[in-house]
Amino acid sequence: MRSIASRMSVMSGEGALSVFARAKELEAQGRSIIHLELGEPDFHPGSSVVESVTKALAEGKDRYCAVAGLPALREEIAHYLQRTRNLDVSAANVVIAPGCKAALFFAMMVLLEPGDEVLYPDPGFPGYPSITLGLGAVPVPFELSSRNHFQPDLTEITAKITRRARMLITNSPGNPTGTVYTDAVQRGLAELAVKHDLWVLSDEIYARIIYGGEYLSMLSYSGMKERTLIIDGFSKSFAMTGWRLGYTVAPPEVAPALALMAINTYTCVAEFTQYAAIDALRDREGTTPRMVAEFARRREQFVHDLNKSPGFRCEPPEGAFYAWVDIRGTGSSAEEVCRILLDDAGVAAIPGAAFGPSGKHFVRFSFASSVENLREAAARIMKVSAAWQRTLVAT
Ligand SMILES: Cc1ncc(COP(=O)(O)O)c(C=O)c1O
Image (cartoon, rainbow, N blue to C red; front, side):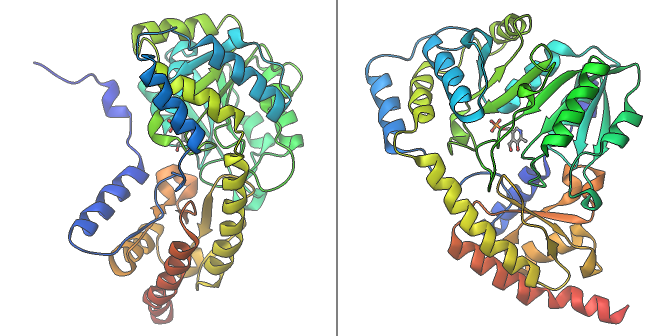
């Protein structure tokens, strides 16, 4: 009997993409929808990045190229991490991948054996448990709770580390909560990783999108150099989601294994996009700081407006571009709130359980949308909130 491999039955999709599909259906029927479901900046890369890609194509830079990525791009990433994160990284340790998701998948495939336990944040990026399960490993969630300001709880994590624990995934700033892990928490996580000899997969895709303070990478803590892999890329910080460009910074013995994964799968990342990525990193036009300043403005306004909606409670996120709203005060489930928002108000948002069981009383809104859209969304939410206020009065 022909069948699909059993690993596919344990992997999962993404809530954001299914809400997006439903929202698109409604749009096709003529409804006005404000899309706050996808984690996609509503900006585009600076004009010099677009000029670089055009120039590279005109010069015939569309061939198979270096498996681990263009040496010039890997050098530029090393400089960039020195400049923006104060990290001392060698270009030899950088491997370019077609997006952060691919970088995550390959890093986990290279490091995990079936049965290994992977500690990861809940709520968190849905790929962490899905990829873990797909590789026959065991996801072990640690909670990011509102009681703890969505910071990882070191006591809980310590209690969950067993002899099978092999990897700790961190994500600061985090999707969906926007939490920037404190120095003390990261130091504690680093100590646990050293004590229990864990790999650390530090997903730093939102590192540039923070609203104050200086970014601290997991790689900068004592004992981390030999066990930490940074996953980062161009989708969020450089508004290049569709370019499919990411990278891993790995210890010297891991980088060749990642290159071997490249040989066996994507061969190399499109050469012309890599030339443009060099330009994006240099950011001579200041595109990233301008975009982040705009996100900061929207965050102020949108979080303020959401907190005026009956039953909604939202702490301003410290990073990324998501409002993570506690909806317990509505008396309805997050699924029901999202259904009302989409069907009655034309506002697309994601029920928090899409990011793990600890997200079940929350809804995630992306504020990577124009100020006008966000104002209009808040007004529409206010209007339909009567639906759950009625339920509350009735019960
Ligand atoms: C935490 C996190 N990691 C990884 C990714 C994947 O990024 P990419 O578009 O580079 O594959 C995302 C995208 O939403 C994300 O939020």
